[in-house]
Structures are given as structure tokens and as C-alpha cells.
Length: 329
Image (cartoon, rainbow, N blue to C red; front, top):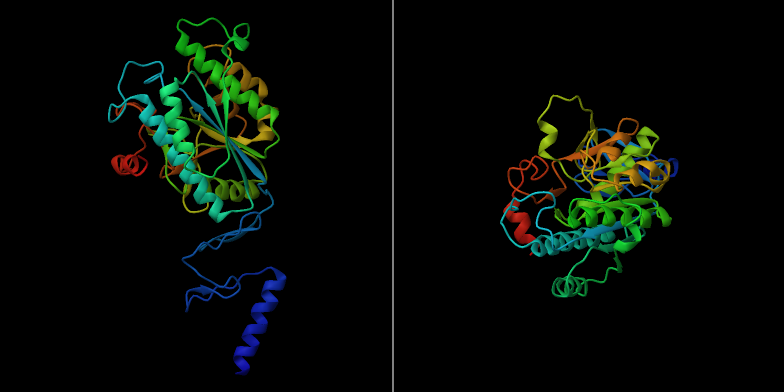
């Protein structure tokens, strides 16, 4: 009896001081009142990873803006190849959006206080496909806003291109960057419409961002995909512990990534120059930022870029592509 009283007092005192207790015999944390195989972290407070202990969260995340770029007319931009499963582009757009909505919903259950906004930046979607997208949106209670790309607005800004597809892609990207620059959200996540996401993607990115950022005492860039091209040369990398998986430092991404509003302002010239012409590589000026700032991608992948099966920019390794595809029909 006396022993239990002392134990309870010790637990209460530890809570007051901000310490967590691990009871490895019972495999629980008495201070958190959770089993150790549960999620022990608390958003914007502390990140706890066994057996590495606790990281106090100094970089708190208030809100995230998601900019989802759609173009259901172009099968694979800049290529004449077919995607995995060889279906019309709208099928990839719908599955991409469906998986994103599911991931947002999953995240909102875990972190109800976090503000998440989703804007669809649409580029020339025809009425038939637009109705399919709207039917999908109507099935969710997530607040989703449509924004149409005004192509004529950028005619005097973007250099004349060899084809209209390239111009449209650059205009759509610049439109997304301008929206991000105008908004005041804490983090911004740029997403293309041929990525299919695992349900925990948003939760893992947000929780890992605040953990790593608090440890490094700096903002950074974060890509949700583990691209095959990252394994095709002998480049050094650092491996970091995120929320529920490992992350590695990378020096290249495509145009799907997350970063802070602070960095959009700081590197606005790089974002802007990316959209003025067809660069080689396309992401040349974005990748230049990674010479000064950290960028990380997950091991294993949180999102799969559904391109051609032989593309070095596409399918991440060790994934059941068919299962993920079918789950988001």
C-alpha cells in the first residue's frame, strides 16, 4: 500500500517536472498512461521515440497549406511513354486526390487542432473530368478550394515554349508558387496529381518535420517520395530519425515537396526562375537551394510517383504498387 502511494506520488511529481517514466517490465509509460507500442509523441509538445528518448518541440507547426496541381489531359509530361497500368491520366488524378484526402482525414483525427487547407490548382481540366473530381470532393467534409490557372496572365513572363504543354506546366507551377507566397500558412506542401499517397503520409511528414526541425534548430525541405534515381550514384547521405520511420538527406527533388513559408520568401528568386523557362533539369533552381538547405526523403516511401515503370523518377522500391492503387480507387 505504502509502496503504491510513493509510486503514484513519484509519477505525479515527474509529470509536473515534464519527465516521462518508462516501465519496461509492464511495457507502459505511467506518466503518459500509454503502452509503449502506442504513439507516445504529442504534436507541438514532445516527440518520443524508443529507445532514443524525448525531443522537446521548439519548432511548433500551426498550419499547413496543400497546393494540389491537376492536369488530366497530359498523360506524361515531356514523355511519350505510358504509366504503370496504362490508364487515362484522369484515373491517376482521381486516385492521387483520393489518397491525399484520406491522408488529410487520418491526420486530422490524430491532430484535430492543426489547420489544414487544400487548394486545387487546376490546369485545363475538361468538364467531364472536372465533374469526376467534384464528385470525389463532395464525398468529403474537408474544405477544398478550386483555383484556375490564368494562362494569359503569364504570357509576357514565361518564355515562349516549343509546345503548349510545357507552357501550361510552367504557368501552373508559377500560379501555385504565387498562391503560396500570398498566404500566411506555416508550412506549404506542393503536390502533383500523379502521386498516390499512403494514409499516414501527412501525419508522418508533419510529426517528423517538427521533430527534425526542433533538433536541427532550422527549417528545411521535405519530399514524400523515395525516388529510384537516388540509388543510381554514389552520393553520401545522412540518415535521420523521424516520427515512425527513417529519413535520408537528398540533394534533388521533383516538384512535389513541403517546406516553410519562411523559405518560400527567402528563396523566392529560385521558385520564380524555375517557372520562367524549361530548365535542364526542370527543377534546376529548386535543387540549387539544397546546396544551402537540408532536404530529406523517407525510407520507405510515403508517396509513390506513378510514372512509367522504368522511369528513374518514378516508382519507389519495396512497395506493393497494385495494393496501393486498388486501395484508392
